[in-house]
Length: 156
Image (cartoon, rainbow, N blue to C red; front, side, top):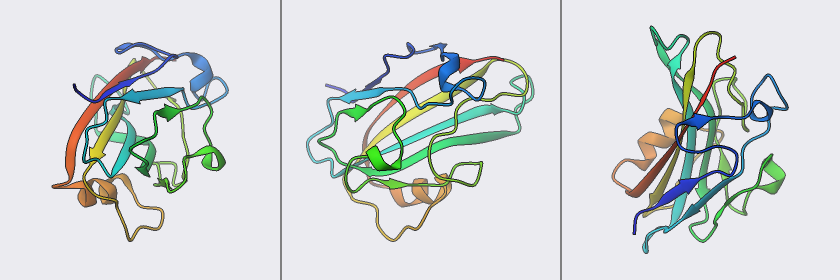
């Protein structure tokens, strides 16, 4: 069975509700995962937007959320999960607003895609203090044993 990632807030390739964006309450959506493979020692969640700033002419990938060392026996995150509600041992990376935590969709123009990527690793990532997405991805190299992607869209 393959690692799966779902949300009760939106379907794959469906619209992300306003409450999870900068136009609403900017709450992280509820996420659930299953079928974490045997041998997984940690999970990584990265949420980003490869359509920034304009889907017609993207120039960068905007990072919205970075979590690492999620326990492999965890099953998801509730809506509006802040630092205090993360599973024990979970680390937070820095998003492109230069802070930790979730930052919801806030596209300047057009319909953007928001990739929620979950990785199962055969290692626990160490030596970080507020890492960037790039630092987490570098540390993950050679340790990914499964991955799942959930894409939501949003347009203002």
